[in-house]
Length: 297
Image (cartoon, rainbow, N blue to C red; front, side, top):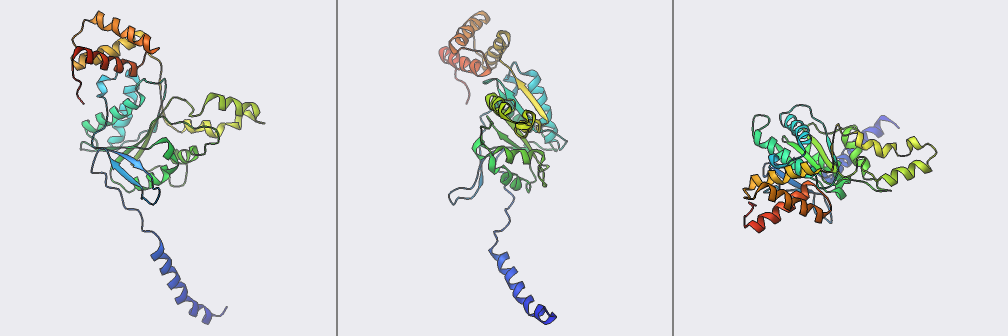
C-alpha cells in the first residue's frame, strides 16, 4: 500500500477509534464508602447496576463476650488491627465446628479495630459482605474497591464449593493469582465448616478415580492454602460451655445463682444435643426471658 493510501485511511481510522471510545462504557467510579462502616455487595442483575448497600447497624457481639475462643480472638484481632493501621496482614480462613462464633468473631474484630482507630482515625475499616452465590463477581467488586481510599474487609460467610462448581477459580485468582493481584486496601475473610472448602467424600472420590491421585484435587484443595491465616474452631467442652453462659449472664446482669445457672445450662445443652457458642446464646435468651430481663438490641 502506498503512502498516499495510508494518508487517506488515517482520518477514517481516527473517526472509527473516536466512535468506539464514545460507545465504550465510562470507567467505574470509586464507590462512596463514607456512608457506613459496613456494606452488602449486590452484583449487577436484570438491568440493575452493581451496588454496595450500606448497613446502618451491624448485628455484632462485643468481642469481650466471645468466650472459649481466646486464641482465635487474639489471632484475628491482631491481624485486623495491623490491616487497619496500614501494616501487612493476611487473608483469613475461619473453619471448624458449627455455632462456635466464627462469623461473630469476624464482625466483632472489625468493630473492635474500628473503635480503637487505625491510620490515625476511628472507623478506618469498611466491612463488605459478599454472598456465597456471588463469589464469581468478586473480581468485579475488587476492581471497584481498588479505587477507594478506605481499607476494606471483604467477608464471605459459610463458604464452600461442591462438585462441578467453578466459582472457586474466581476466589483463587483473587487471593494471590492474576496479573492485577489483590488490591492493597482489601483483605478477604471467610468462614467455613470445611477446612478445604469442599466435602470430604468429593476429595476421596476424585482421588480414588484419578490416574494421579495426588494431583486430582490439588487445584481445589490448594485454594485453602492461599489463606495466610488459618484459624480452627472446635466443639466446646463442658467447662468452656459454662464459661460462655457465665460470661453472657454477667454481661447482661442476669441474677441467678452460679449452680442454678450451670444446672439449667446443662439441661438446655442436652435438649439441643450439643454445646457451642450458639447454643449458649440461645440458652441465655431463654433465661433472660424467664427472668424478665430485656436484652439491648
